Each structure stands twice: as C-alpha cells, then as structure tokens.
Image (cartoon, rainbow, N blue to C red; front, top):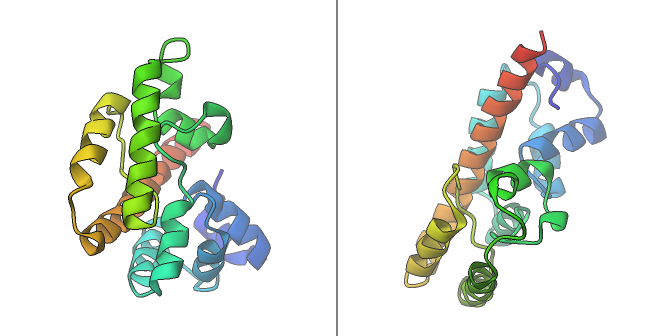
Length: 173
C-alpha cells in the first residue's frame, strides 16, 4: 500500500524505496533513484518523472527496471500479488493449459536470448494466449525498439497499479 504522497515524501530513503515496490517491482536500485528525487506533488508526477529518468539511464540500468517484472507465465508462486492478478492467475481454471505454459516458457527463452532482457508488456486483462501471440510477433522487432517498448510497458503497469491502489484507498475511506 502506498502512503499519501505527503507522507511518502517524509519517509526515510529505505522506507520510500520499499513503498515504491508497489509500482516498480523488483527494481530496488531504480526505486532508490526515484526516492532520491523527492519531494513529489503527486504519485502521477512521481511516475512521470521516473519515466523520464529511466529513459536517460544507461541500458544496463534500464534492463534492471524491465527485468524486475516476472516472465509472462512464470510460476504463480514466484510472482507478486500485483503480477498474480495482472497476469490473470486469479481468473484461470485449475493449473491452466500446459501447452500454453510450455509455449510461453519457450517464447520467454527465445525472447530473452534474442534481446537480452525480459519480455514486458501491459497485460491489461488480456488472456495469456493473446500475450503469447504478441510475444511471438515481437521476436522480429529491432532490439532498440523492443527495449523502448518494454520500458514504456513498465510505466504503463505502474500507472495501472497506481490507479488500483488509489481506488482501494478511496474505497477504505
């Protein structure tokens, strides 16, 4: 849960970095950089500034931000609660389709071998079969284009998470 932005601005660096995990999953160095940019007037401003920062980072640091997100189709036990819902594990029956799981594993391996980073896409409730088709089609993309697309997806995901967290906070009031 994210504290109100004025409280976030007053947290210690470690607390702020930890809070940002809700938006930027498994990217502690990046979250640290974002926390160091405080104060922010809003979380929307935070995400906008973070996106600008990410675009100017060295590629190795951009890849850290992208690779913080789990693989599409990763084991449900290995993903955060946000990724669990975003990837549709809460909507799939039983253990899902093994053929699709195998296809996703193969596509993840091929994608990472080709580009050197994880496939990251804003799932937005789409079924994994559709995401597999998207991933497959992206294998012919240029690396620079795909890096840009993946980094952009990280911030689309962060904005969606912020919206959900904000709705949850308002519902509890």
